[in-house]
Length: 354
Length: 256
Image 1: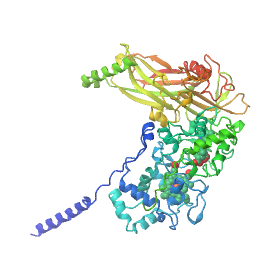
Image 2: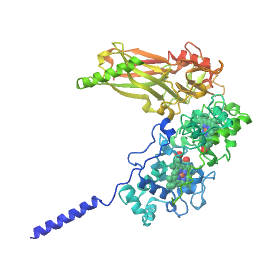
Image 3: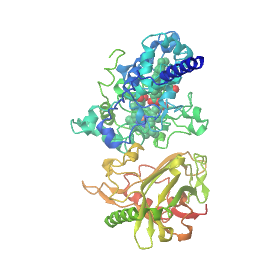
Image 4: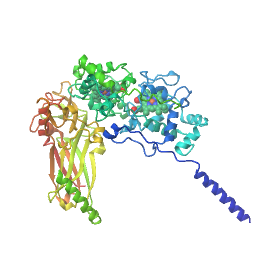
């Protein structure tokens, strides 16, 4: 008798234990279908999505919520979106952003779009972060950014009744930690795609270029004129960046070593990752330290402002003459072309609530 | 081109028919790409210093080297060809591009030759059609006929040891003459490289080796001081590059 009761109790214990492991109530997250622009589909290889973090509807929704979550910062004052403003194509209007307690960082906040097409998966100006998940770890604890620590972040998110069910929906478990938070953020970031600028519409045959834009494009593509395409791509690489590291002649002496600080190789000093030329009219100021307020100043830099250094890229071949020496007309044309790569609507419909 | 397609089709059906039998004969080919300057190796650690002297006595550094080969093939004794890889982009800074590991079902005893084309032949050199090459920003502007680069060799040189360093962009493409009226006039600059191999050694590693010094000497002595950049639209420079390229490559069979 005792034996039977014991067995029954054991069985029911095992049963309930098993039940916990088989969460019948949890429906698996729905795959999120990435809306790959036709131009990317035609011209490029598929985006990079890590197998251990596939995109799901629930994951992306959670990631978006976290992107706007001020609780990620130590004093609850800033979110990712404080430095990556949706209306600025997810960049900052300040040369260097302000972290908590208005502490200034040292680099310009990068715009966020087409990140899944960075095939080498090296993020930040100097490529120090491998993968978007790893990248998202950094701002949360950075002393000049959110200055928080992960156990505090996890605690404060758990305290909000909204979050545990959202994590469960996205990842099948209510565990909230640095891994699940950064996975969700990375999923959201991969959905930020920009490919609907006037130049894209021209390429797709549903828009035209002005004569100035056309001339500007030609000069961008000409090796004996602007020669921008070797690094910034072309109509055949509609990302408008090679995502590689170059020294484009900003300085002779480096305050920020860029890639060299990561690799420790002096031959990499002063090299930074080529930024995309999309959405430029919404991402001022420019360069890794936000030194140029206007695109005119950027063009002047390439035209006559190059500074020599041992690591300057050989493609900056006219450094001895200061640069590619464009006429005023050519500068105006190049500017007109660059502006045609901006998509005015991108990011504007992304708010914490929609 | 056509008969190669037919051959591949036949090969496919042939293989399907006697698959299990052929499995024994499966051949793994490792192909390494190696670059040197008159036998001193060029690797990511030897870049950037002015350690190379060309035949014209100029000292140069190499900061970037990428090149494209295509139609990597085995020539068989019956005169037919098996294409191992349609095209391959080598980037000296990417270790994975420097080794190709290929499988083929061709019996060892049938192989007579290994060959490839430097660059792309005219038919293959279509604008924007290879997504991986587009992603690598390897395109040639449409104003020069479009298609793809064959090589990007970039660095700096000093005409004399004490002279100021000047950049060079030794970029090889299909030669294009823009001066002959409105239509572009092209001249082929791709070329085929081939090497006879004997069957007993075919299971060993192959190394495709590039001697960069040869780009600057044979048959045209090259002065970087004269021709250093903006060579893409330079019809005559592209022809000289292609001439010099013909002695650049060798295919070496190494014991593994």
